[in-house]
Image (cartoon, rainbow, N blue to C red; front, side, top):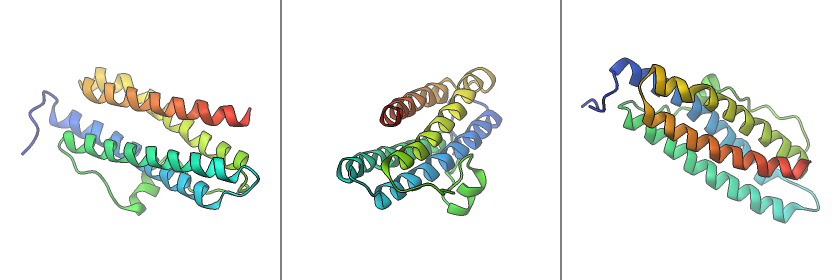
Length: 157
């Protein structure tokens, strides 16, 4: 049964497709955060290891909420790793060190990339696709990423 939420089928599909890209980005970032948590080395290991654990917990919650937003729009959330790699703006490549500063810079770049992607869709969702709900949702999600980016940036300045 399709949702009767006042958004055309075409607009719901367009928004769900953009959210699928966001979901792919979030999944890649989640995986990269796990990598940072698992492979961190250095004198600040314990405190940063704990911080990365907090970050991947937040990422898991974000992933779930993006997938649920796609479902609210009447579409299925993609759930194949191969598709995530094809859709994502992010890359899983990493050639830096496993020290905290290198890993934090690595994660910061991806948070900022996601912020830019979300910012580019906020008004489009509301104005062109008549989906104020998703516009509001991604605005709040962007604010979460901005706070995380600020905290990561504070580590490397």
